Length: 313
Image 1 (cartoon, one colour):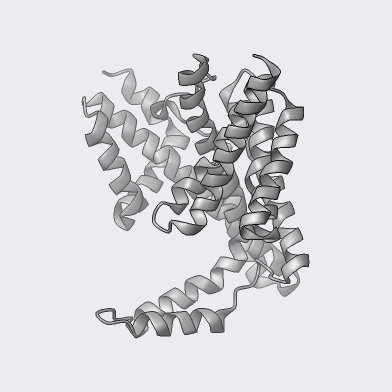
Image 2 (cartoon, one colour):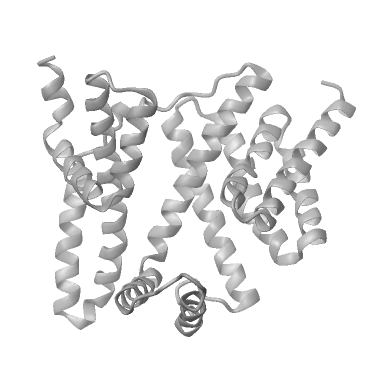
Protein backbone atom coordinates (compact mmCIF):
# COMPACT_ATOMS: atom_id res chain seq x y z
CA UNK A 1 0.00 0.00 0.00
CA UNK A 2 1.52 3.33 -1.04
CA UNK A 3 1.95 6.14 1.45
CA UNK A 4 -0.65 8.35 -0.28
CA UNK A 5 -3.16 5.52 -0.39
CA UNK A 6 -2.52 4.73 3.26
CA UNK A 7 -3.02 8.34 4.30
CA UNK A 8 -6.24 8.55 2.29
CA UNK A 9 -7.60 5.38 3.86
CA UNK A 10 -6.59 6.57 7.34
CA UNK A 11 -8.32 9.91 6.76
CA UNK A 12 -11.51 8.18 5.57
CA UNK A 13 -11.56 5.81 8.55
CA UNK A 14 -10.90 8.65 10.99
CA UNK A 15 -13.67 10.74 9.45
CA UNK A 16 -16.09 7.81 9.55
CA UNK A 17 -15.31 7.22 13.23
CA UNK A 18 -15.95 10.88 14.10
CA UNK A 19 -19.16 10.98 12.05
CA UNK A 20 -20.50 7.88 13.81
CA UNK A 21 -19.58 9.32 17.20
CA UNK A 22 -21.12 12.73 16.57
CA UNK A 23 -24.14 11.17 14.86
CA UNK A 24 -25.00 9.48 18.13
CA UNK A 25 -25.58 12.94 19.64
CA UNK A 26 -27.92 14.09 16.88
CA UNK A 27 -29.88 10.92 16.00
CA UNK A 28 -31.68 9.86 19.21
CA UNK A 29 -33.13 6.53 18.07
CA UNK A 30 -29.97 5.24 16.36
CA UNK A 31 -27.57 6.92 18.78
CA UNK A 32 -26.81 3.84 20.87
CA UNK A 33 -25.95 1.77 17.81
CA UNK A 34 -23.78 4.50 16.33
CA UNK A 35 -21.89 5.05 19.57
CA UNK A 36 -20.97 1.36 19.69
CA UNK A 37 -19.90 1.39 16.03
CA UNK A 38 -17.72 4.51 16.25
CA UNK A 39 -14.56 2.69 17.51
CA UNK A 40 -14.69 0.08 14.72
CA UNK A 41 -13.01 2.18 11.95
CA UNK A 42 -10.07 2.87 14.27
CA UNK A 43 -9.63 -0.82 15.09
CA UNK A 44 -9.42 -1.48 11.35
CA UNK A 45 -7.07 1.47 10.86
CA UNK A 46 -4.63 0.22 13.48
CA UNK A 47 -4.69 -3.33 12.08
CA UNK A 48 -4.17 -2.20 8.46
CA UNK A 49 -1.48 0.39 9.26
CA UNK A 50 0.40 0.86 12.54
CA UNK A 51 0.05 2.37 15.99
CA UNK A 52 1.78 5.60 14.95
CA UNK A 53 -0.83 6.21 12.27
CA UNK A 54 -3.51 5.32 14.80
CA UNK A 55 -2.28 7.91 17.32
CA UNK A 56 -2.24 10.59 14.60
CA UNK A 57 -5.79 9.57 13.75
CA UNK A 58 -6.79 9.87 17.41
CA UNK A 59 -5.44 13.43 17.60
CA UNK A 60 -7.06 14.47 14.31
CA UNK A 61 -10.37 12.86 15.23
CA UNK A 62 -10.39 14.57 18.63
CA UNK A 63 -9.72 17.95 16.98
CA UNK A 64 -12.60 17.37 14.55
CA UNK A 65 -14.93 16.42 17.42
CA UNK A 66 -13.85 19.56 19.31
CA UNK A 67 -14.50 21.81 16.31
CA UNK A 68 -18.00 20.39 15.82
CA UNK A 69 -19.16 19.74 19.36
CA UNK A 70 -16.70 21.28 21.84
CA UNK A 71 -13.80 20.14 24.07
CA UNK A 72 -15.90 17.88 26.33
CA UNK A 73 -17.08 15.92 23.31
CA UNK A 74 -13.51 15.67 22.02
CA UNK A 75 -12.30 14.34 25.36
CA UNK A 76 -15.12 11.81 25.46
CA UNK A 77 -14.29 10.68 21.93
CA UNK A 78 -10.56 10.32 22.63
CA UNK A 79 -10.74 8.51 25.97
CA UNK A 80 -14.12 6.87 25.72
CA UNK A 81 -13.76 5.28 22.29
CA UNK A 82 -10.71 6.09 20.15
CA UNK A 83 -7.99 5.02 22.59
CA UNK A 84 -9.82 1.79 23.40
CA UNK A 85 -10.22 1.04 19.68
CA UNK A 86 -6.52 1.53 18.93
CA UNK A 87 -5.54 -0.62 21.90
CA UNK A 88 -7.97 -3.35 20.82
CA UNK A 89 -6.52 -3.33 17.30
CA UNK A 90 -3.02 -3.70 18.75
CA UNK A 91 -4.12 -6.50 21.10
CA UNK A 92 -5.69 -8.37 18.17
CA UNK A 93 -2.31 -8.27 16.43
CA UNK A 94 -0.47 -9.59 19.51
CA UNK A 95 -2.90 -12.25 20.76
CA UNK A 96 -4.32 -15.33 19.07
CA UNK A 97 -6.99 -16.28 21.60
CA UNK A 98 -10.34 -14.46 21.43
CA UNK A 99 -10.95 -14.69 25.19
CA UNK A 100 -7.55 -13.14 25.91
CA UNK A 101 -8.27 -10.37 23.39
CA UNK A 102 -11.65 -9.59 24.99
CA UNK A 103 -10.12 -9.75 28.48
CA UNK A 104 -7.27 -7.34 27.77
CA UNK A 105 -9.47 -5.14 25.62
CA UNK A 106 -12.05 -4.90 28.40
CA UNK A 107 -9.35 -3.86 30.88
CA UNK A 108 -8.18 -1.10 28.53
CA UNK A 109 -11.78 -0.01 27.94
CA UNK A 110 -12.40 0.11 31.68
CA UNK A 111 -9.21 2.13 32.30
CA UNK A 112 -10.21 4.61 29.58
CA UNK A 113 -13.72 5.04 30.98
CA UNK A 114 -12.48 5.51 34.54
CA UNK A 115 -9.90 8.06 33.36
CA UNK A 116 -12.62 9.90 31.45
CA UNK A 117 -14.87 9.93 34.53
CA UNK A 118 -12.09 11.31 36.74
CA UNK A 119 -11.14 14.03 34.24
CA UNK A 120 -14.79 14.97 33.67
CA UNK A 121 -15.26 15.27 37.43
CA UNK A 122 -12.40 17.75 37.72
CA UNK A 123 -13.50 19.65 34.60
CA UNK A 124 -17.26 19.79 35.19
CA UNK A 125 -17.60 18.97 38.89
CA UNK A 126 -20.14 16.24 38.10
CA UNK A 127 -19.64 13.18 40.28
CA UNK A 128 -20.98 10.00 38.60
CA UNK A 129 -21.32 8.45 42.05
CA UNK A 130 -24.04 10.96 42.97
CA UNK A 131 -27.27 11.63 41.12
CA UNK A 132 -29.10 14.94 41.31
CA UNK A 133 -32.38 13.54 42.68
CA UNK A 134 -34.26 16.89 42.66
CA UNK A 135 -33.54 17.24 38.94
CA UNK A 136 -34.72 13.69 38.33
CA UNK A 137 -37.91 14.39 40.29
CA UNK A 138 -38.55 17.48 38.14
CA UNK A 139 -38.05 15.36 35.03
CA UNK A 140 -40.58 12.83 36.35
CA UNK A 141 -43.06 15.65 36.98
CA UNK A 142 -42.58 16.87 33.41
CA UNK A 143 -43.08 13.35 32.01
CA UNK A 144 -46.18 12.86 34.15
CA UNK A 145 -47.61 16.11 32.80
CA UNK A 146 -47.45 14.97 29.17
CA UNK A 147 -50.79 14.07 27.54
CA UNK A 148 -51.64 10.38 27.78
CA UNK A 149 -48.83 9.57 30.23
CA UNK A 150 -49.61 8.72 33.83
CA UNK A 151 -46.94 8.13 36.47
CA UNK A 152 -48.55 6.42 39.44
CA UNK A 153 -47.21 7.05 42.97
CA UNK A 154 -46.08 3.42 43.14
CA UNK A 155 -44.12 3.70 39.87
CA UNK A 156 -42.61 6.98 41.01
CA UNK A 157 -41.53 5.54 44.36
CA UNK A 158 -40.06 2.45 42.67
CA UNK A 159 -38.16 4.57 40.15
CA UNK A 160 -36.79 6.89 42.84
CA UNK A 161 -35.70 3.90 44.90
CA UNK A 162 -33.89 2.49 41.89
CA UNK A 163 -32.14 5.82 41.33
CA UNK A 164 -30.90 5.81 44.90
CA UNK A 165 -29.27 2.43 44.27
CA UNK A 166 -27.63 3.43 40.96
CA UNK A 167 -24.81 5.53 42.53
CA UNK A 168 -23.92 2.54 44.70
CA UNK A 169 -23.42 0.24 41.71
CA UNK A 170 -21.48 2.63 39.46
CA UNK A 171 -18.31 0.42 39.60
CA UNK A 172 -20.27 -2.60 38.36
CA UNK A 173 -21.91 -0.50 35.65
CA UNK A 174 -18.48 0.69 34.48
CA UNK A 175 -17.18 -2.89 34.29
CA UNK A 176 -20.21 -4.20 32.41
CA UNK A 177 -20.11 -1.26 30.00
CA UNK A 178 -16.39 -1.85 29.32
CA UNK A 179 -16.89 -5.55 28.57
CA UNK A 180 -19.98 -4.93 26.41
CA UNK A 181 -18.24 -2.14 24.52
CA UNK A 182 -15.23 -4.35 23.80
CA UNK A 183 -17.35 -7.36 22.79
CA UNK A 184 -19.47 -5.40 20.32
CA UNK A 185 -16.44 -3.60 18.88
CA UNK A 186 -14.55 -6.89 18.42
CA UNK A 187 -17.52 -8.67 16.83
CA UNK A 188 -18.29 -5.88 14.34
CA UNK A 189 -14.60 -5.35 13.55
CA UNK A 190 -14.26 -9.05 12.76
CA UNK A 191 -17.14 -8.88 10.28
CA UNK A 192 -15.70 -5.81 8.54
CA UNK A 193 -12.08 -7.04 8.46
CA UNK A 194 -13.23 -10.35 6.96
CA UNK A 195 -14.91 -8.47 4.09
CA UNK A 196 -12.12 -5.96 3.51
CA UNK A 197 -8.99 -8.06 3.94
CA UNK A 198 -10.32 -11.64 4.00
CA UNK A 199 -8.75 -12.02 7.44
CA UNK A 200 -10.69 -13.95 10.05
CA UNK A 201 -10.19 -12.87 13.66
CA UNK A 202 -9.96 -15.50 16.41
CA UNK A 203 -13.44 -16.73 17.23
CA UNK A 204 -15.08 -16.82 20.60
CA UNK A 205 -16.49 -20.21 21.65
CA UNK A 206 -20.07 -20.84 20.43
CA UNK A 207 -22.61 -19.31 22.80
CA UNK A 208 -23.95 -22.79 23.57
CA UNK A 209 -20.51 -23.66 25.05
CA UNK A 210 -20.15 -20.63 27.30
CA UNK A 211 -19.40 -21.68 30.87
CA UNK A 212 -18.02 -19.85 33.88
CA UNK A 213 -16.01 -21.53 36.66
CA UNK A 214 -17.88 -22.87 39.72
CA UNK A 215 -15.77 -20.46 41.82
CA UNK A 216 -18.30 -17.79 40.82
CA UNK A 217 -20.67 -19.48 43.29
CA UNK A 218 -18.14 -18.94 46.07
CA UNK A 219 -17.94 -15.26 45.13
CA UNK A 220 -21.73 -15.09 45.43
CA UNK A 221 -21.60 -16.73 48.87
CA UNK A 222 -18.86 -14.29 49.95
CA UNK A 223 -21.08 -11.39 48.84
CA UNK A 224 -23.91 -12.61 51.06
CA UNK A 225 -21.57 -12.88 54.07
CA UNK A 226 -20.05 -9.41 53.40
CA UNK A 227 -23.50 -7.89 53.07
CA UNK A 228 -24.56 -9.35 56.42
CA UNK A 229 -21.37 -8.11 58.11
CA UNK A 230 -21.81 -4.63 56.64
CA UNK A 231 -25.39 -4.46 57.88
CA UNK A 232 -24.48 -5.69 61.36
CA UNK A 233 -21.32 -3.65 61.97
CA UNK A 234 -21.42 0.04 60.92
CA UNK A 235 -17.63 0.25 60.72
CA UNK A 236 -17.78 -2.38 57.95
CA UNK A 237 -20.43 -0.56 55.91
CA UNK A 238 -18.06 -0.43 52.92
CA UNK A 239 -18.52 -4.21 52.62
CA UNK A 240 -22.20 -3.67 51.80
CA UNK A 241 -21.38 -1.47 48.83
CA UNK A 242 -18.62 -3.77 47.62
CA UNK A 243 -20.83 -6.85 47.89
CA UNK A 244 -23.64 -5.06 46.03
CA UNK A 245 -21.36 -4.43 43.06
CA UNK A 246 -19.89 -7.92 43.00
CA UNK A 247 -23.35 -9.45 43.40
CA UNK A 248 -24.59 -7.53 40.36
CA UNK A 249 -21.66 -8.79 38.27
CA UNK A 250 -22.11 -12.34 39.50
CA UNK A 251 -25.83 -12.29 38.73
CA UNK A 252 -25.09 -11.28 35.14
CA UNK A 253 -22.68 -14.21 34.87
CA UNK A 254 -25.49 -16.44 36.14
CA UNK A 255 -27.86 -15.03 33.52
CA UNK A 256 -25.29 -15.48 30.73
CA UNK A 257 -24.62 -19.07 31.76
CA UNK A 258 -28.36 -19.71 32.04
CA UNK A 259 -29.00 -18.27 28.57
CA UNK A 260 -26.14 -20.37 27.21
CA UNK A 261 -27.72 -23.47 28.76
CA UNK A 262 -31.13 -22.56 27.31
CA UNK A 263 -29.54 -22.00 23.87
CA UNK A 264 -27.86 -25.41 24.11
CA UNK A 265 -31.12 -27.08 25.12
CA UNK A 266 -33.07 -25.39 22.30
CA UNK A 267 -30.48 -26.48 19.74
CA UNK A 268 -30.68 -30.01 21.10
CA UNK A 269 -34.41 -29.84 20.23
CA UNK A 270 -33.56 -28.51 16.73
CA UNK A 271 -34.84 -25.01 17.56
CA UNK A 272 -32.37 -22.71 15.86
CA UNK A 273 -32.05 -19.36 14.12
CA UNK A 274 -34.71 -16.72 14.69
CA UNK A 275 -36.87 -18.90 16.93
CA UNK A 276 -34.02 -19.63 19.30
CA UNK A 277 -32.87 -16.02 19.41
CA UNK A 278 -36.41 -14.74 20.04
CA UNK A 279 -36.77 -17.10 23.00
CA UNK A 280 -33.41 -15.98 24.41
CA UNK A 281 -34.38 -12.29 24.14
CA UNK A 282 -37.69 -12.96 25.91
CA UNK A 283 -35.90 -14.97 28.59
CA UNK A 284 -33.53 -12.07 29.22
CA UNK A 285 -36.06 -9.24 29.34
CA UNK A 286 -39.10 -10.86 31.00
CA UNK A 287 -38.61 -10.70 34.79
CA UNK A 288 -40.06 -14.14 35.62
CA UNK A 289 -38.17 -15.92 32.83
CA UNK A 290 -35.02 -13.98 33.64
CA UNK A 291 -35.20 -15.19 37.23
CA UNK A 292 -35.65 -18.79 36.08
CA UNK A 293 -32.70 -18.43 33.70
CA UNK A 294 -30.58 -17.07 36.56
CA UNK A 295 -31.35 -20.16 38.65
CA UNK A 296 -30.61 -22.37 35.64
CA UNK A 297 -27.21 -20.71 35.30
CA UNK A 298 -26.42 -21.23 38.97
CA UNK A 299 -27.31 -24.92 38.88
CA UNK A 300 -25.49 -25.43 35.57
CA UNK A 301 -22.33 -23.96 37.13
CA UNK A 302 -22.65 -26.36 40.01
CA UNK A 303 -23.76 -29.56 38.26
CA UNK A 304 -22.69 -29.06 34.62
CA UNK A 305 -26.04 -30.12 33.15
CA UNK A 306 -24.81 -29.99 29.56
CA UNK A 307 -22.27 -32.76 30.09
CA UNK A 308 -24.72 -34.82 32.13
CA UNK A 309 -27.63 -34.51 29.72
CA UNK A 310 -25.44 -34.48 26.63
CA UNK A 311 -24.14 -37.98 27.28
CA UNK A 312 -27.67 -39.35 27.24
CA UNK A 313 -28.55 -38.05 23.81
